[in-house]
Image (tube, rainbow, N blue to C red; front, side):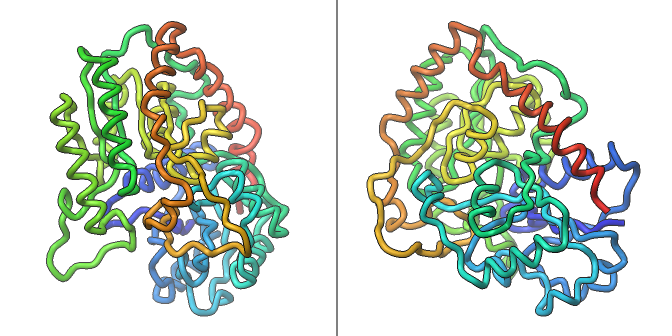
Length: 392
């Protein structure tokens, strides 16, 4: 038996990208290790009451382990007041680093607090390699003296059903999907990108897909509290409602996959994805469907670099703050304040650049994506599979 510390909230925003990570990991683990019993606990929950069960497990597997100094513990991960009460190894799976904007300057400046660094070293001493899901996370850990890292990719990259298949390279776009940004400040940019897609593919079925819910689309019962996700903030609901309205006017069908993995099944019939949500994008790439991943923060920046995707950052840094590194104020990582937005505002050239790129790729059947399948498959063979085999 294993305990999984999941990033998926059973209530609240229902981010299906987080659920995809958990489900994909269980699937590939059992493919290699055989039928296994799992217990899933949300990472923001206090684990004290669950200790007897956890300590009967072989390990506490922490999927999407978040490297965020807010601080990390107790903060993003609540765990227990006394970490030594957890008697089994705590092992990160697909650790990630996330700040806004998460570019080269941030990677050079980042300096974690001693509290977070001590926690990371405590975790690092319990395992062989720390699984990271893209190269920049490994760099950040190594910068802070955590050297036992292994770039395994994210569990969501992998599915036996698509393994060793080439990327699909459509010569016609019959169905295109757009996934909106998390950050309120990218509303206008997102609408302009949808206009580009509507202009390029007037006869295609166009879908605007929301990966998680908000206070309008998925209101919670009065008095009920969910996860701490900023996706449930009023600003997020206003942003999403503006995007939904614009999408309808542009001929898009509105879909939501919040809480429900089956709502992603229609992806099989799609030809192209363009959007901000990392795991929305990975839902297509794992199925070998071309996807333009618009990097809204460090997560998208890291995935794009690691998978060899074309670089389309939503932001354009215009300030380079001097002085000591300032610790982020939120646990989400994406832009949620005007202070952060002024450092790296939306790149107004992005919609046109995406349009130009898509026109080029239509002429060569999306050749820029041809190598992505090989990266996923070789990382599976050389890194993720041996890592899973090495777990307790």
